[in-house]
Image 1 (tube, rainbow, N blue to C red):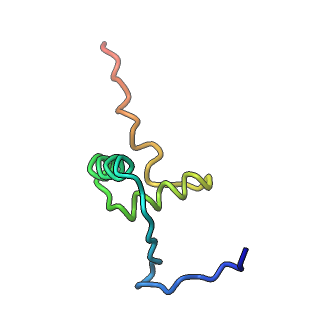
Image 2: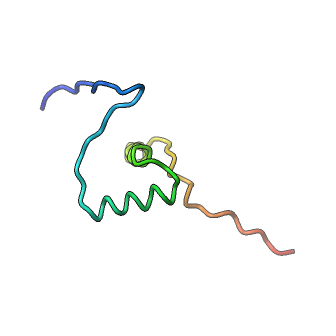
Image 3: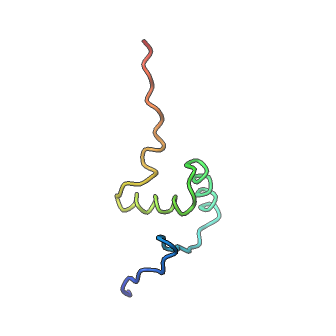
Length: 70
């Protein structure tokens, strides 16, 4: 395998071009709508999560804690 070469940046971000299956694309689109994120932000959060780093997705699905009735 070749050595890693950093990509040419666009501003402070690196382009990521790939192909996914139609059902994966649809699932990603639904997630971007649910989390109010761009595709790039969603993919970046998934990469961070897979690497064990803090990310924008963790904790977003947790609902509000129920308030005990008095």
